[in-house]
Each structure stands twice: as structure tokens, then as C-alpha cells.
Length: 340
Image (cartoon, rainbow, N blue to C red):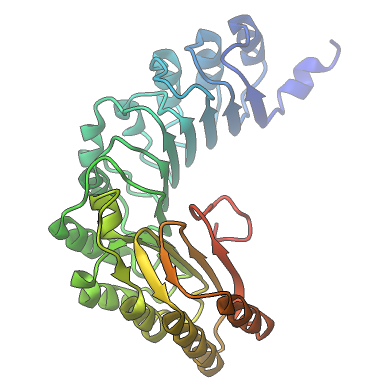
């Protein structure tokens, strides 16, 4: 078509599928050099044409790969190799249901700032993550990974950036973290205390001193997800953790702009605990001009309160102490009302 060459030469975003004909991508590659954002859905097979198009780009920045197939997808060797040609510019990768390329490919993206993982199949050679160095990484979201042990992510975080803004996971179910690993994790993420805005952390009362000190260091923290350690250790017969102690620490040590609190796992809350927490949060905010709190509690938690808690919540919402209160399966960080 007349003018197609000129229009395509300015194309900056592309949504496509690996089911598309390689010829289609070869044709695009003749004109397109300025694609910065690439979304591939469904992404289920290697495509030499798409690989060629990727290779020809001057500066690919943003990559999203998605499949609805929960089974293992064959590694996309050609596409993975092509992506390494964009290693100097790629800053954002989001993969859904599969990693698609190898961990060796991933290790080349040294300027990556955002990595979002939702993987339902085992990552081959996942131990490469232990020694991988992504020095500019700021956001790590693990929305699902039931195969990679906690210790591997701990090593990955340790060897990567000291300027994380967010470290989030839904639940890591592959193997339970040991007490020593949790203490090491707190030490590791403390290096990013100056920049952290949101973090997920495993907790038991054995670590309350370490947690208190960590919270005191995180002056820019906006939100935290606290996973009861016993939830990860034992899915059925684990001991409930009383939330009273940690609620007191949060009131005393959370920074001024703290506004998102998520409890996940086997916590127990009494009416007295939650009433005291809301009351103390109110006067904390009055003294430091703090922000109203969004409180998210997982369905695994145990509540020893009656219908009167609804009146309590409504009262503190009306007083702008609470922004929202939800009993929810997990905290969805894709919600635009939450931290980005």
C-alpha cells in the first residue's frame, strides 16, 4: 500500500503472536527499526521471522510474552537469541505461564529494571538464577512459581541490585525457607532500605527484632506483605501466629507514607487486636500527618471477631484512618490504585 513503508518505519509498539506467519515478520523487518514495546500473545512456538524482526530493532525496551498453555512450552531458541541483541536496551520483561527463553538468555539482560514472573512450569536450569547479576533491577514480581526454592530467589536478589523498589511474591511453595534463610533475606534486602517502597517478607515472632530494625531503616516504604512462615512450612497443620506483636511494631516503626499492609497465611486476629491497631494508627497519623491505610488480609487467616468489626471498619473509613479493608486471596499489585 502507498505510504506503508513510511508509516511502518515509525512503528513503536507491536502486538503479535508466534502463530503469525514468519513471512509477515520478515516483511515488517524490511521497514521497522523503532519498535520499543513488544507484546507476544499467544507465545507458544519459535518463529524465525519474529526473531529476525527483533534483531533488526534499534532499541527494544519493553517485552511481554504470554501463553494460556500451562504446560511446558519448548524454549524459543531463535527468539531468545534475538532478544540478546537487545540486551543493552531491554529494561522491562513480563512473562506469563512460562519463562520461554533460557536462564542463560535472561542473564544477558544486565540493564533490566523490571522483571515480572508468572510461571506454572519448572524453570530449566533454575540454579543459574543463584549466580545471575542484574545490577539495575528495581522491581521483582513473582506472581507464581511453585518449583523454585526460596533460597534461589534469595541468592538472585543478593547478587543483583541494592536499589530495589519492590520485591513481591504471591507464595513460594517449592520448599520452606529455614530460619537462617529468612534472617539472611532480611539482611540482604536491608541494603535496599533507602529505595524500597514495597516488600514481601516471611515472618515469625522469632524474627521480631530483625523485623523491627528493618522497618526502622525503610524510610520510603509504602507497603509490605507479611507471610506467616508456618503457612509455607506446612499447608494444613501449622501453628497460627497472633498478629498482636507485629501490629504494634508497624504502628511504632512504619514510616510516614506507609499505607498498604497485607497479611498472608496463618495469622490470627482478635477484635481487641484490630480495634487497638486502628485506634493507634489514627493517633499515629494525626501526629505525623500520615496516610490512610489499605489493609488486606488473606482468607487463610483466623478471625475471632463478630459482626461488630464491620461497624469498627466503617467508623475508621469514615474518619479517613482506613482507605479500604479486604479479605482477599492475594494482593494484586497490578491494581492501579496500588504501588507501581
